[in-house]
Image 1 (cartoon, rainbow, N blue to C red):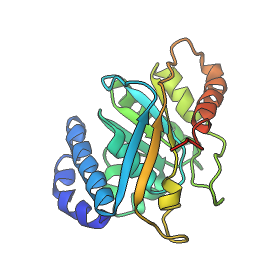
Image 2 (image 1 turned 90 degrees about the horizontal axis):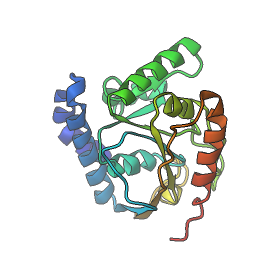
Image 3 (image 1 turned 45 degrees about the vertical axis):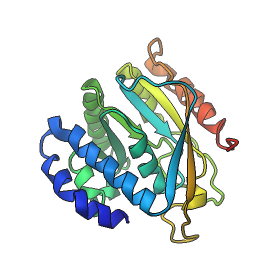
Length: 229
């Protein structure tokens, strides 16, 4: 289903990928691809909001990561213009390469220079009003059932530097529908529950308090890992 709908919307994705001013249209077709491929696979995303969100604001969206479905869940959730910051290997995936050559930003964590350039570009996008989606664990762990791993500091420094609110998101049970890429335990249809917490403003935080903010966001996301469905 992912491949089918990606092929159908790819001409529009390609058309709107050349100009940064058109990324909002590219994201609309990305949302169409995510929504239709998920629904036609029998997976429905149900969002539980802790508060009403102002989608006119710019956010750094931080979520736990246990499944490839997480990307579709967050893409479908977004109501404003957005981009992902993800590992450089996604440039080699035919389904994600076009995005990571245009709207999304790849990062090579093994290179300090490459990481600096990626975070600098990310900051510029945030200043232009685009929301960032990132998985601060930086990986899908090897444990099954999954556990919440420690967070990287980068997203929180970015949020403080750019005075952008953090939006914590707990993806509750995507791993039960399809853990990681589904190769080990397969996949199954059903309802995926996503808990969207209250935004955490970063105004007033100092750069050296990034770890304090990191731990606060970790605790919020972790608090709903066993969300009562």
